[in-house]
Image 1: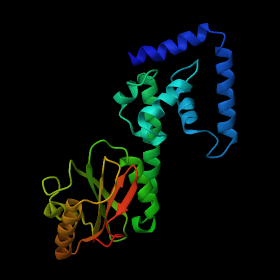
Image 2: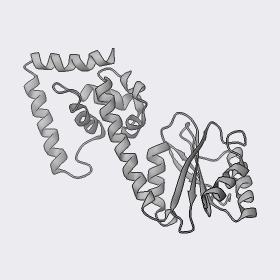
Image 3: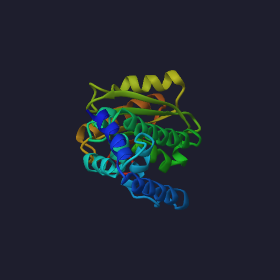
Image 4: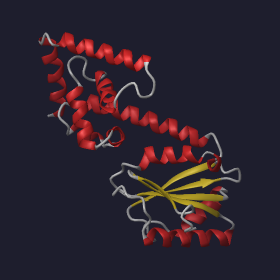
Length: 241
């Protein structure tokens, strides 16, 4: 079991003289982390350091590198499901929780940046938030960001999981929600689990229907953003709204 792997790393390290070397490695990583800038540690070393909290002694480098190999990147590891993390050798429940806590903190920080300023004036902060939250999802998720007259976020609504079509997102319901909460504008968002953010015909068609429904009732559709692990696409920037 993964939990046993985590415990075995600790017990074997305690009985092994090489644990002194591991302790020295941990000290060196700590010094680099505290004394360096944003690039002080490689991605796997960041995970190594995170795992120190769960695995009190021993070498966490193999588990850290296994995580990068399994999920492709540091962002992929932080976005992974807790059960998927625990399927990696050396990662138990405590380690998975340590990783997920950092992912949660990153999302909270990114969301605060979006909430504190008008969305249209802090577009990169919005893209950062959406990328952290959605780029590595394994299911397609549809969200609507509702804005007030100052273009501040008033509601970030998770509409549905699944392909973006009228079975998942109904134009009239999207606009009715805007009217119900007093929003004056909205931004559609969804992700492509394939990683490729290029819009499909269905993406373009449903966007047009929602934009047309909004025009009739004075609700502006500012954009439809598609997020993928390979980047993002703005339908407005492509001239599709």
